[in-house]
Length: 549
Image (spheres, rainbow, N blue to C red):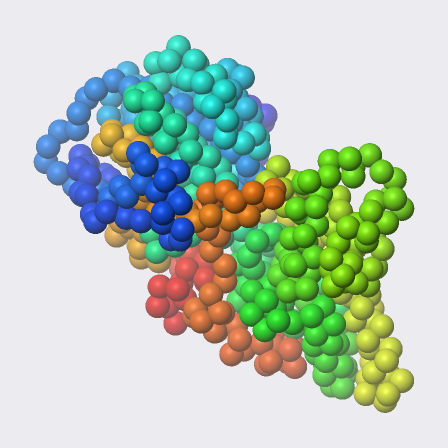
């Protein structure tokens, strides 16, 4: 490992805290049988061996745990999120506590490492080098999808060779969907290999009542809020720029909402509200222009605008256009070989009338970005669409019209930012360091209890760590059917911002005040050392969701 900074050296000695239920010997208590959140008949048919399993909760017991020896494989899947190394550390410590002879193998560069038999044993010396650090570099990550029987069989070869009894997949909704498929496949073949998932994504859209937050969200939003606050302080110092800031969050606006609650910007778009109110792109532009003019009337020609990365897909007219584009491009692979002009003509000729009109009305650069290569899941790569520049350009044109009408007297000078990768590999906050370690340790207990097709679940997260509740929920419980790449597929349902939930309501109650007044908050950097009220607090989203004031 590379030379460690002074901070890394000090963080290495941090001992993550565990819930009381995981500190001694544990027993799994079964709850009620479960069903999927939607499309129950279809999901049950696809997962006959792992559907309807009960929830599990761990409780302390005086009984000594089974000392059977077993080996575990671990995979980091998808994009990075702060705390992944602590999940692996917790998993390692958990299996070693059960039996010091247990061994942990890391499959390299994601699920592809399982299929291609690329792995390394993770020993105590290696694990100790990565405790409480950011990134996924201990074994690397990748986006190979595990969905074909030949992949499962290739994986089984190395699993058998290494004597592995369980595989832990650390990933987001798609990765954990793959975990459910893998668990079902091995269960159907009566192969003694367990599969456990861990909830990772900075986007915050992998959650429900049992998965209260995905790991990495807390750290990433604290990193983004620090830089948003820095920009707002600069903005308030020079008093001459409007900063348009795009934030990660392809499928939901949790990051934008959390950062807004932390920094109190002049304006923040919440994609779910745009969709619910059936707003157009022009509606959004007009409202931002209204706020710019409102502030200019008080002599304030500056402000901040937060924009979720996936906004374009939530505008109803754009959502319909993108859905048809996805199906059309999936059905016509020859599209990729055409030049740019021929691609545009092809799209206009093959879209329905309304969608063709919407496509033609877009700036050519944005229209082109909508036809670029899809990600591995068949989705538009929205991070490539410069929404922040599109909005500021359209706001500038609208303000020019308002000036001609005598309804705007200010100056508008935009600046543009996109914060994405900056937050994915930060050293985890104390909350994420504890939460991730508990998720990994908890996964070891799920393995020891014989569970498969489960996701590691640690709840009651706004309370002190000792009061957290540990257990597991069947992954199929979170699934429904969705249209992907032209086909209906089982996937974990994404959790969107709840417009009736307290986090959004707090934002909605304050945004007009933040728009007119300069109410910026400057959170500063993540604090790792000091009083608990400074260092250990969870996200404001979690705080408000669990009844905080």
